[in-house]
Amino acid sequence: MIQRLSAITFAVRDMPAAVSFYSTFGFNVVYGGPEAAFTSLHMGEAYVNLTLQPDYTPLWWGRVIFHVDDVDALYHTITSQGLTPANPPRDAPWGERFFHIVDPDGNELSFAKPLAPSVC
Image 1 (cartoon, one colour):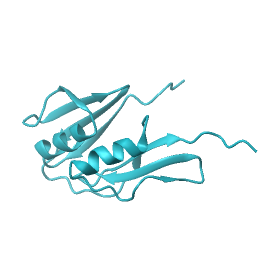
Image 2: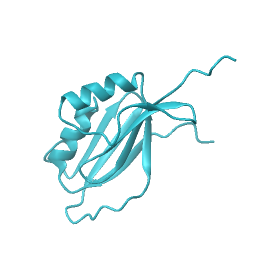
Image 3: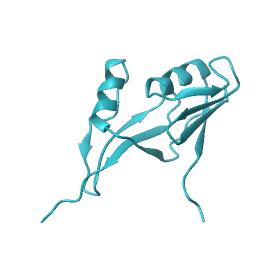
Image 4: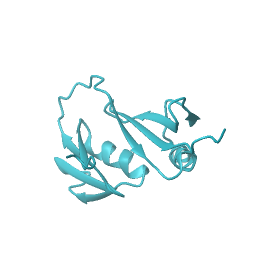
């Protein structure tokens, strides 16, 4: 039985730009780094791996969703550092507050927090 997603690996064309992008969210390099061909970054229980593919042509493949403690605080942190999400945080009808952002290589990320169930 699968208990959780451990890591996701993205192909990237520019390792220094990718490491800088993910570091903005609070991911810490645990292996590799800006000059490496493979880098692993960690935050909480999640890992993002980056593999250098200079000829990579991005096509939309889907999105990865990270649950975070505070969607709005993360949004303000990254926008204050110059990143531009696709949308500001908003509440979704499926019960999450979220925003999306695309990394420098076209990989789509969503940062979300489940909303408290409403009491009727």
